[in-house]
Image (cartoon, rainbow, N blue to C red; front, side, top):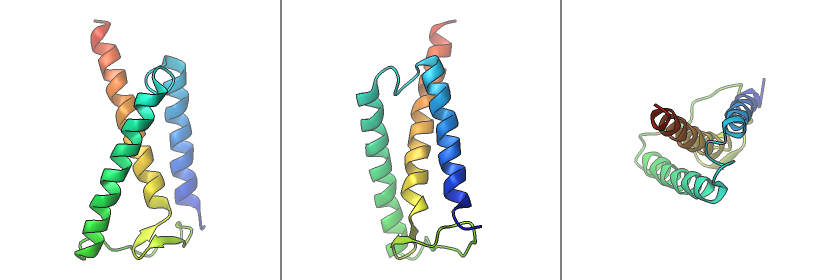
Length: 104
């Protein structure tokens, strides 16, 4: 089913955002800092992907779960969305860990 992977990423991001909102961990406490960290991390990993694609290390496999739209050769549209989700999850996880250790 095309788009299922993107839908799974977006649903997962919504779950992380709900936890972030409930506990005011990252974007709901300091949105500017959070989105800068997500943007910088996403850009870093996109450059990493570009280098991997250029050297032939990364190739896009075939899957019926992808939309089938590519931003560049071997770079599906889902990749930057996933990378942004990964960075957001890392920031929220870090803030949750810091919040937990500070409360002890």
